[in-house]
Image (cartoon, rainbow, N blue to C red; front, top):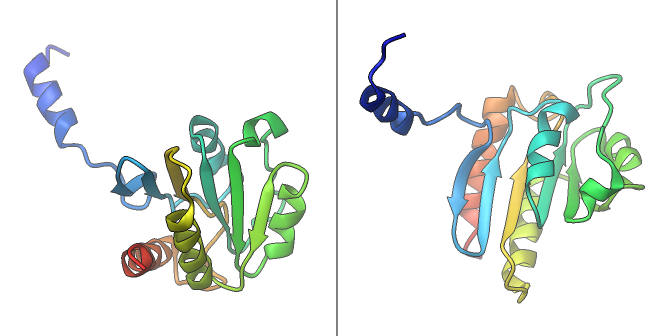
Length: 161
């Protein structure tokens, strides 16, 4: 294509990615928080889950019919799921043989408890909160953007509690 290397590097450095698609919204030595609200199926979440360790996975919403979770138990050793939304029973049935999980009434109570739990944990290892719902947002939100914005708001509100 005869593009100059300097131009390519400059363009790549400017690239921000899509909002609410594997978007890092907070990062420190001990914690990374990723907003992946755009993930509306299990397959949209799986590759990122496989690449991370010490994951607190926030999952839930309106499940898509026939969606399958293609994760083996060995991929789930370092994942704990936090389930919310109208189809909690669908998600817990998929997760119960793979990983530990907790179920919550809503996203607000989930985020509040999770951030407090991480703050009180004295384990030094780096942790990742992954908001990758693997479901449609229509049970509680107009769309994935509204859901992603709400998650960012909750993190900002409760991160220093």
